[in-house]
Image (cartoon, rainbow over all chains, first blue to last red; front, side, top):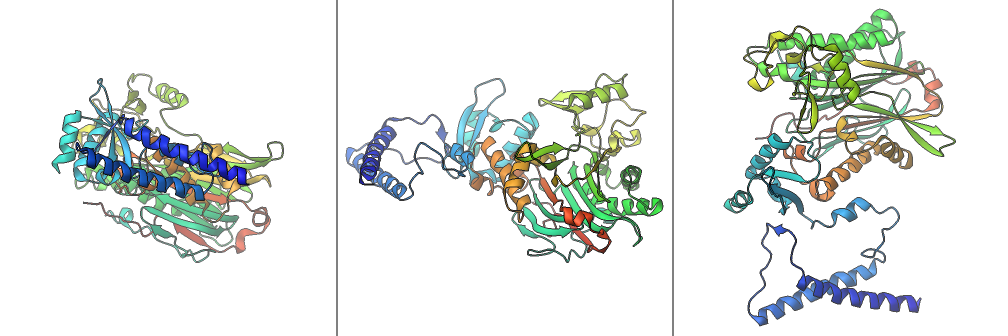
Length: 155
Length: 379
């Protein structure tokens, strides 16, 4: 039992550092529509935001330690694998693909609360005309990314 | 004039039922009746709305299947998946069962012929309603509904289907050590090659009888199903003209009806191995396979099983749209249609004890899916 605890702690500590440093380095592969807090240019504010994130990250990892099994590389028996996969999209968001037919599509994370907005409904109506309701995969919106951002910030 | 279409969908006494409200409960866009008792066992029903106006309708009737006490008794299940609007499915929900009772009284039995006549009469009645309201409400000509019916009577199960809803039987197989899914209905959807072949054979002179649109096969490029109740504009050429909206009008007239209300009928003698039936509109089956649905019903408690099937379907729908199930629930009706269709699920358990018992003493039950849900459009 003691050996097991030691192992778990070591694992947590390495996860902690790995997560913190990976987060610093990684650049988002998609654009977020809700603006993230921009990294301050002054080193002091960068340090404060870094410690804040460190604290938050440590908190989540420590709380994970209480419910053993979750956050690890396996799925509990009876746990829903669908929920696990969807975890790649942050809570409260969904991925939509924006672009014009034949061109490149940009994957954009949109807060779910925007979906019910009349302006977004208008975009979805256009999507239905272009692709129908049964379009496989994520919601695809046939419009230029610049127009899409206009809708986003124009309201 | 439109009264039969617009009557509120809560009807019948529905006084029997083990759990909760006999007429079912509403929770947001979901309506459910977790567990009730019919002449041949128990049942569970649930529906979820995605369209601005609910286009799916459903009913379960148990007790006498004719106007005579001495006539046939049993259970009737109907799933009506409307398209183009809610009017046809509401009309079918209000008239099909009474038409069935009328013909069952005349013939003094339930038979494939009785069910077929009930389908065709209901369709004729709706088409005459469209004609009556042609000048005030021409859009009624472009509204239709799929129609799936199951009747359990005297140890026989009759399945009649026009459209793309589906009923699946869960049968206990000793060899399979579980419950096997057996599909009892055939979908009349142009995405099936056999349906396209049937349409081409019926309309050999029309090279455009089926067209691929948005990567989906559609009859005349307009509709996915080849059989339905309603859809007057594709049954009678007199409706295929102004004032009907231009997008529904065909470039040339037609002499033969393009769609039909003729149901495919299948009769099955129930055995003790037959455990339950899952009736679902196509909204369910686009996300769950027959065996997945049967496994869920087999492995989980009966109470609330229809709701659980809908949840499983919505979890798949959320995953396909790259979001979480908890977030999908925040999306309002209308916009929801981009994520999933209206879904109706009726699970009918077949209890061998009830099947052998004389069902003439069973209580009369009449329950309509969706009672208490909004019937007027948003905004």
